[in-house]
Image 1 (spheres, helix red, strand yellow):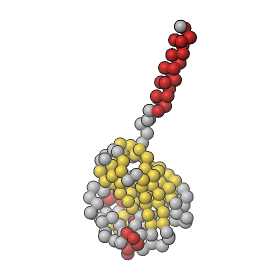
Image 2 (cartoon, protein in one colour):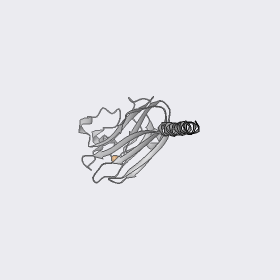
Image 3 (cartoon, rainbow, N blue to C red):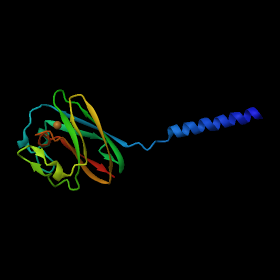
Image 4 (tube, rainbow, N blue to C red):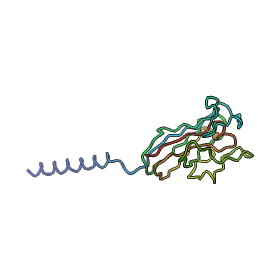
Length: 163
Ligand SMILES: [Cu+2]
């Protein structure tokens, strides 16, 4: 009788341990971002920024985010620079209207980060390096882009939906 009681207690305890292990901790939702290029040459004249109607098939630089849709709350962007020789980064901005081009500084070949509203970044990753950004996001559309001069206009951006 006593042994049985101890056994069932042990069983209950191990079940509890298993349950607490299986419970998701309130970790941030993970988005894998890969930044890459086919050439280090930039051509801002291609005008491949968001809502600029450029021919994206000519893009020489890319930013891919998986998944492209996440629940609202804490989100971690794990960014990996897959380039062989070029520094890249990832900047996060709200993009409530994807038909509207971002404020752009043509002299610097860069997005005007302050005017575009800057929510966070993983800045200047060397080739092969990774970095992470964790933010709390409300539902909406957000833009992820690289703001190394010329890269945004070379097609280095993508959007993510927060539901
Ligand atoms: Cu870049």
